[in-house]
Length: 130
Image (tube, rainbow, N blue to C red):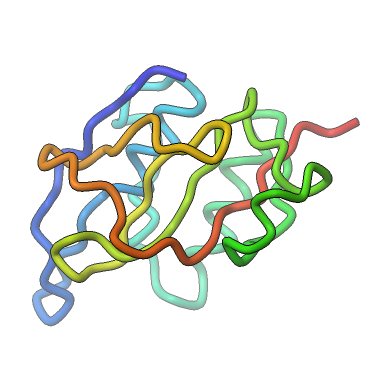
């Protein structure tokens, strides 16, 4: 994992502006320049998940779904990418935010403010095929 910071921190859905924390987390996990990862939040609500899944699969992994944070201790669901997980929750600014955890601890916040999460909601189940 190479920590990549997000390049868009402004969040104003009414103007169609969304921070790119998820894009930065995916870039970090797959050790890619952020420009090589789609800004998933810009896709329509109906298609962003398909774009996310297609990108994950193009990197040799599969996306099993989103799990509530209470399942983070389940070793069968939290393999992640080399042990790293994208955890989603609420940032100190009150917005949905994505960060990277390893061993149930924050290891990378893509926000330049480095505030982490004030509330953990869940994590993305990204796994290497067996």
